[in-house]
Length: 376
Figure 1 (cartoon, rainbow, N blue to C red):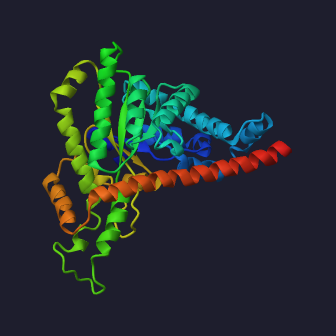
Figure 2: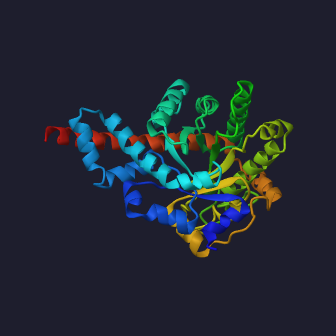
């Protein structure tokens, strides 16, 4: 059994953080499903920006849209929904074989709606109708405005991937919204076993920012007057934060409130580890996979990270190990004067902006092609 496939024996699903028309046309996606145990796909505006902007595979569809008088936004919807629809079809056997646990493909609402509850609900419902596949997940940022939007979509029976979670507090707010959506469905006499959700908890970006802040506390000679030495925490905070988020998940899964929903047919809202590619070349290329393996979780990996883990990763039940040490890491971080709540607040806002920029750039590129092709 290869290493990626072996993750399933520990209760974790391997999803891919990548999607393009080239991936769909070359046959690589079916190979990943068949040989590597791929069980889902996530996408975002940055991924589509790279796919559409860096390929001619979309030009014919853009030209057809241009000749039909469609706007750049309408063409963008058509391009992305076509890829998502095709990916859903490729993963439908996984969805069916797992009884609706896996086989999902995620499509994000416009990043311009991250602070707009009503707009997110309307666009999420619109995209779900456009794609028209049972194994679609609509991605909604886990902002204060996104949480009620996700709840409403889930209540309506639309699967939701709540993304851009950095703090345990934000994750707990998302989990509470999941509980409320299920309780509302139950009260309305609707089934609970046909709606699914994941909470996407971001990992590596935390270390990227925290390592910088820790570096500010180290003298040019490598020393520091602070205890513990700031260098001792570098590369450790993101995994510690994720382990404590999983501990929160386990507490909620053991609650009477959840057990009542589970008895009525509900499935857990799984934690999904996102941003699991290693940014610092000095660190292990599987450092955000190996320590975060456990039941009811997903790891959505960039292609390079998946290849690295498949080559030399060490599968094992690791998520529940070293939890007291994880708590100590966050205590030590606070002792050094670094407020993790401020860090995660900054990362949430930066994350939104990192999706807005490629989204705007892609729409501008489509508009330029649209004008050129319409003129022809």
